[in-house]
Image 1 (cartoon, one colour):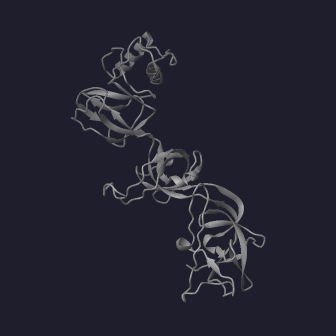
Image 2 (cartoon, one colour):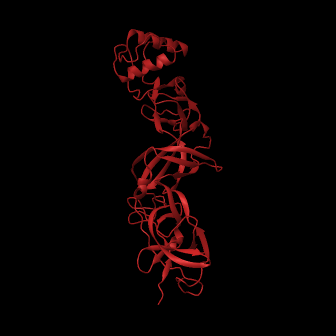
Image 3 (cartoon, one colour):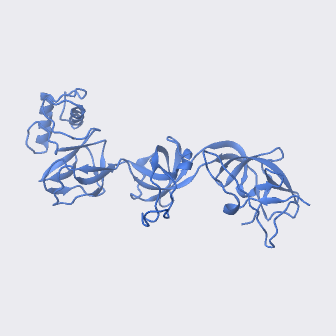
Length: 368
């Protein structure tokens, strides 16, 4: 009786499961129209493909969403009626108006420490340093030492110059409700309160983000090794335009997706319950990205790359009756089995090594 060879075919025949960077291949026979398995020596395969030498990547393609960096809620600093709010989608830079309460503007300054108290002469702290840096950057704080965290008489003078420029009372002090600190220019994503509302201290007025474009996506925790901070990626934007970037962060495990919107309550409901990891991507040239916010995009992860290896289509693999894997080499009108060792899988191909295998050889594949 002749040996039997089984094609590994598509989703029914080759199951590639990523677990800690490894792969598992499960073979099932592909049967012909007559219900008979294809066998060695039972004729030429229905189609062939060449053995190729080149770089092979284990990268993945994942779906993501185009957005902006560092989303946060901007809360009201004091009581009053909201009389003006920056428009959705607008960008606000240093000293720009974010919103107004009782006709008085709340302005943006740059810094990591929030505006948690009024600032006046004698106060000390990182927030005082931030204020001095901003006053200097705006041209009001000439001569101030931004590394000195003390609110000095010179600081008060600089504050008065800033207040005079905006035609407000020249008190030399800064109220908690006068400023909001953020890491840089801010983009208004949406308003959380409308003109005429009384949001009150600590209540959200605006949802803002940074102005830098980023992509966010989730990846199965089992595949998270394919996404490492600093790795290059390619992002396919709406309209088919590609943009290059890098993975900025790989966060902690996210809540599993619930495709049923949380319906169904208590017990083993539907939806994808796999653990996910949050990943963010920054662009190499963010200023060139002009697609709408929240646009769907496709991110190609580079993963591991093997240089100059031989590879064949995954569905060219045979599960040999005696164990192991092989391919069916077609030469001079004849077909023969060649045993191979498997390496990395990627983009529908698999790395193969074997003494009898050479670049350019034709190997059998099932006709799909």
